[in-house]
Amino acid sequence: MFRLLPLLFAVYLISEHTNHISPKYLALGDSLAVGIGAFWGCGHARLYYNWLINSSNYRYLSYSNLGVIGWTSEDLLNAVTSNNYYRDAIINSPIITIDIGGNDILRHKYSTDKLYKALPCYKYNLFAMLREIYCLNSNAQIYMMNIYNPYPIDHEMHEIAEAWITEYNAVIWSTLRSHEFKVTGIADVYSAYKGNERSCTLINYNNVHPNTLGYKIINDCYKAITII
Image (tube, rainbow, N blue to C red; front, top):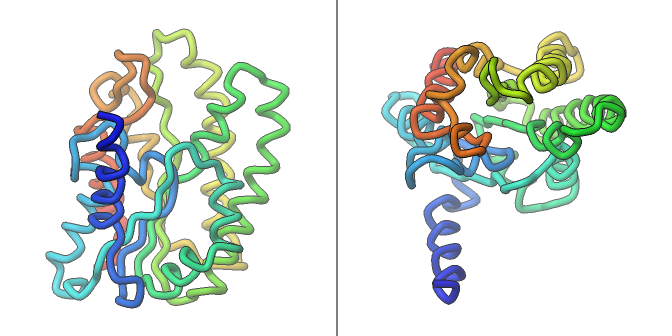
């Protein structure tokens, strides 16, 4: 099985990254952009792309998914500012979706002190990343999703997760009021998941990722704010 991993990864790269020169829909982020937890091809980025190219305005788009499992806002900022592959993709992408921040919280979920210190770092990373994207491509439609709470109300982690996710989401929403760059819209996945955590995520298996239904809902949230 392990001998097949390089081949499977190569197949993934071929299917998720198309011609870097052509105009594309670009997905940036962490394991949510990758689609971990859903059946192959049922992550929200692939669903969103399939929806886009059925619109007469976006039939010309190719697809590029540069999400990376485990990435934090610092990782994505570094890629946007110093990785030419990412920078070229941004320049050639009229539509970009971004999910980032969940791992910033999960990394310190058992330490209130570390979460408190990490919040201003997340704010800096997010704003610096968006400013750089805007400098590279000021005409792109940039859509973000906010952070959902995967823990149902009766879970021991619900309360602390709710408190910090609210703080991090406030940073995301504040980007709409920034005059330094343009964020076209924010997909309110947090509200869509609230009260539906068990049906939208794999939390029953101690996994915070969305399931296939959860990714469909994320896609629906993006579709609801997309300018067609």
